[in-house]
Image (cartoon, rainbow, N blue to C red; front, side, top):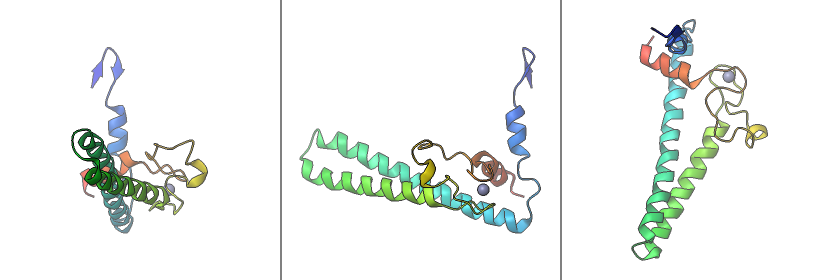
Length: 131
Ligand SMILES: [Zn+2]
């Protein structure tokens, strides 16, 4: 698709064609890893959600019960955050996030493997394509 001479959708097609050369074993390994990653990411967000809910709730009701919710949310957030950071890449075996060395510089960036550039976009494309 081209608008004003600028081709858009290039990035998308790159992602669609990502990981076309994987073997079935590699694909299964990548997808299993990807499902785990997405699950941890979801729980990570749930932790944030619980923290927000407790912050809102304690403004209106007694803080005691909400403090428990806040602790639960905080624990969930921290545990899943650390877990996500220590996952090993399914392709190159290095720590996907780059490990503790990069924890400060790349705190929120888990978009691709630090070692081999295996990207979440590529994994998403692989999952969608299904082969
Ligand atoms: Zn890697």
